[in-house]
Amino acid sequence: MIRCHLARMMGEHKMRIADVARETGLSRATVTLLYKETAQKVDLGAIEKLCQLFECQVGDLLEMTPQ
Figure 1 (cartoon, rainbow, N blue to C red):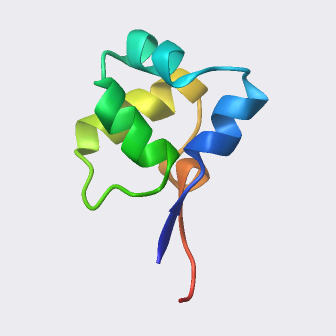
Figure 2 (figure 1 turned 60 degrees about the vertical axis):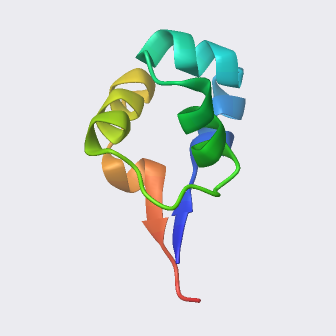
């Protein structure tokens, strides 16, 4: 299972979904799916924009965990 740490990162930076969408240019729907960890697939460009926003690596945002 792949876990997305977007919600934790947003909390640490005191950001809302609307803030992330505005700063990255991603749609609110995309950010919401990642925030709630319900996304089935994600564009690499979206991951890149989030990593740039939070100044992190892909491994900080996404984590593979055993089911």
